[in-house]
Image 1: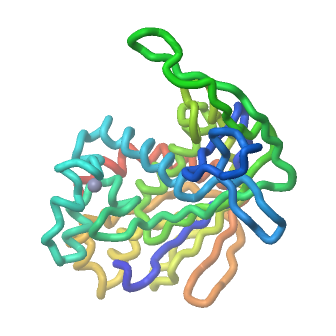
Image 2: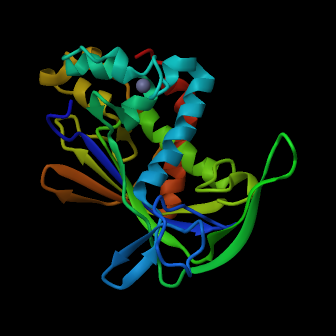
Length: 299
Ligand SMILES: [Zn+2]
């Protein structure tokens, strides 16, 4: 399946905090003027800056996706990556890549496991201009004694500004796009929060999609302008890959229709379409609507 790129989507986004935001650094700075719990920082060409690591965003997306899939389909939907039933353990002795993909849970199919790399990647999200931080004080209350168990400690939080980054997914199935769109919606609905202090009301953000760039492989039977094909539909459309559709547990009808029509650029082996924020919103709605139908297909 990965011998060639069938489809690829890059979503460019801006994250705007709606409540205090703290993505904690694992390291403690020796600088005594910085708070106990610091926002994660990095050094760029323009000096030191707070930022949101791509790995943190990926964790937020994966854990929501796992919750959704387990609600629908128990451990079949999403294994416990660190538990005895993890796909990585279950498939430790398999060598057949098609079988490993087919028998992995749906969460691993997107985010990967110890047997194969996930197909989604997040860049770090960096500030657009000035980001304002403040220090807040917190205590941890013991549930047993209701007394202060820890603290007071200082927390460095972002109170205004915004961060931009992108996510990219390659060789995806339509239901995978649906789950990504659903996660973005859940973030915007306040159901999914980012970073530390979720039960203090921290981490509520707006996740704005600025544009989405879709690359589709050029195949004999051209993908209609108002359709998007998942990897299953691409592989089913060619004689040389048709037999692999079942081996990988893919859906030959892996298609999303009713998409807004945009003009496309020819970029060699790909047809490239660039969707605006509003056009992306329409695609996201279609992809979310298709989830019950697409997830029904046994893979
Ligand atoms: Zn798994």
